[in-house]
Length: 152
Image (cartoon, rainbow, N blue to C red; front, top):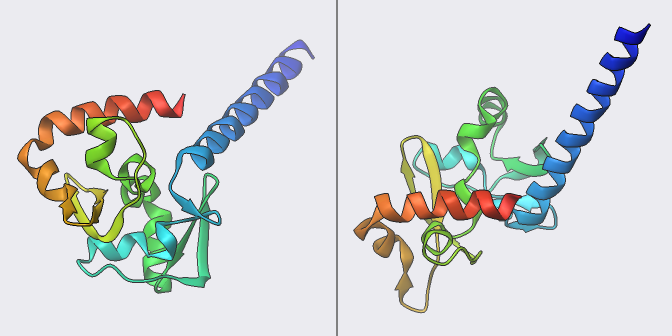
């Protein structure tokens, strides 16, 4: 009986922790009415042609909703969701690395490095993908550190 109670309490703690993590994700991700990437299909970036997703082909992954251009992309995402999610919650990777701030992105300015999708601000002649490329290793290290700090 004591073991069952301990197991039950452990399960409750794990569920509460997962719900807390999901809430932190929703607070920190770049969402438009709860939808990531302003409705663009995350898998389409890896196919080299970013495409708008269809709200009828959607999937909620850990509190974040994604739209997909077709069912094949949805199935790919379900098999490896963390691979396809944008780095830094879909905020400008350069700015997260440089200052830790969350800045909007141009959904057509992106880079895939080591199997991860990075998005960038590119407005008013300020293309931050070009700046990222000049010192990617240092900026990525800083962005990783800044993002972890934001999520906690």
